[in-house]
Length: 246
Image (cartoon, rainbow, N blue to C red):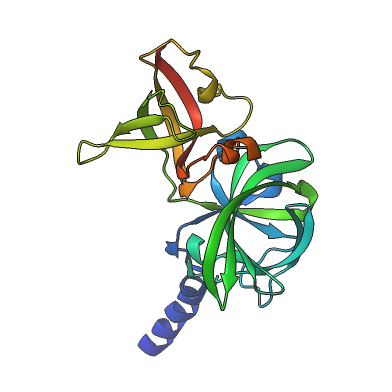
């Protein structure tokens, strides 16, 4: 009888052992449940079919810099251990990889995102860039959200330096000025870069968001900025802004 009871308990526990999610940092959201709380979140998308325990990922064609490129889903998800950082999209020729997306805004038909795009050579990253694009919602069946992502709050002042460079700064742990470019997540937010009128110093803002690049040009940089010797720097993209001094 004891053997039978132990066998019965084992049979009951098998589904829990197989489908336990205690090794996951991914929140799964149906495409139909997309809401404003996901704006600004880092995500992956499941296209056409759910990839949960799938043997083969779906493919999706994305417009990257006005060129249609086919990507294949890379999913490492065994129902027990599934980590956000291990999911990605990779191009058929293995030269491009999208490590994640950030949702910027959406409407009934499209999700507007920034793709974190890596250029690969011999399976190694040789260049990274941020690419803005949109994805039709009817191609997305599920959204995989980075559940560990936490917003950062920064209080930054405007430097008004005479250069084509990052102007917003705070103090780092060494007491030195640390400079950032600021980008609003979408056009519904006050653009911090239009607050300075040439005279209104001190100018200080409180921004909430995430560092999206350690060393790049902000998206508002045009070729004219680059011709003037534009400098790369950290980019902080905010989803909330409060003007403290103006």
